[in-house]
Length: 193
Image 1 (cartoon, rainbow, N blue to C red):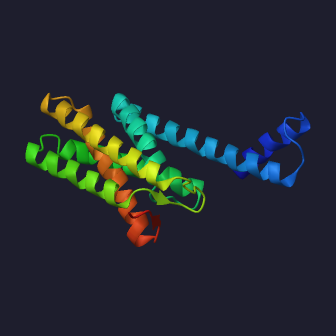
Image 2 (image 1 turned 180 degrees about the vertical axis):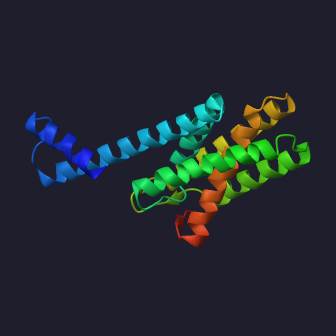
Image 3 (image 1 turned 135 degrees about the horizontal axis):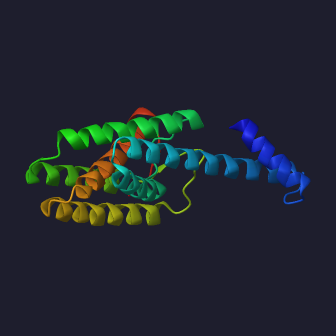
């Protein structure tokens, strides 16, 4: 990753896209690293989805996971390799859970939905040293509303027999677990009213 980022930065400097200013270079370095890591994560989840024949489910997972994590924060690995590994393993576990509890009772579905809404409403957003949150109140409101809306959508889809509803709900539960882990195990910073 570092070698690839250096090649891209050298190309940008050589072509006068950015200056040789150290601050500017570090700013672009971080942006390029985040972009590459995100693209690798998306590629890995897509490949897992294709291999397991859950392509559409993998896209739904990515959409919900990326949107929710943008506002909730949560556990962040300290290296890009760990990040990609944790995300990939989390998706594989989510797919296994999906297969195991595919015919879960409505009561259990509602309990999972309530659990994740309560976690997100009470603990989110979790700030990371690499991703500071400027307006915590706005992030808390947005993450809570998204959690409630996506839970409602997932419940309706599950009742109608659409498997994607359970993928949405399990993704929300995963986001909640990553929030709990970051808050209580890693000592993340939470905004509390």
